[in-house]
Length: 211
Image 1 (cartoon, one colour):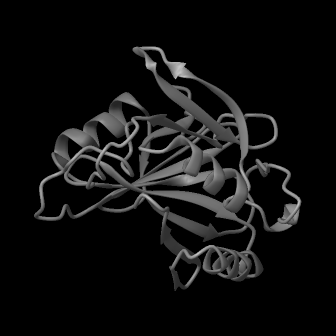
Image 2 (cartoon, rainbow, N blue to C red; image 1 turned 90 degrees about the horizontal axis):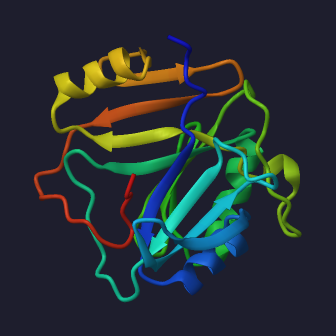
């Protein structure tokens, strides 16, 4: 099996497209590549953010359901999206930039964790470059400090054995730990990590990952 080049795109849910655009383009420095509609429901707007070229591996999208209540990630759901950054200088830059926009963050060694305004979890991981940086131009963010594409995702486990078989046998991910996996193709790679699920039941809504 030919190895996948990591994660192609991630789609989440927002209750307010206008505020979503302001955060992801204005604060996070991503490019709004296009605005279209959900193919399954043309009444729903679909926003696409990515690097300057709209590349696979940096494509974060949102479906807008106006006024939708905030959701809660639970068993079987992705709860945190990880982007790569270049190093400690970038983590310090982002901690300050997020704070100036009213977003609290937590530094943990080589990563910075925070939630977007609707509660969607993120982490920025400082790592030595292995893949071509997927960077969007922004007047306030130097290119060497910008987001560089997906590093991977963290999900809450539900059916561990079935998930292991699907990732390794169907998608060709390789195990890198008891609950961690990586797919590295010819040009890029991404990780998929499972964490213990919270007791609270999953609840779809704004601030959660759709797929």
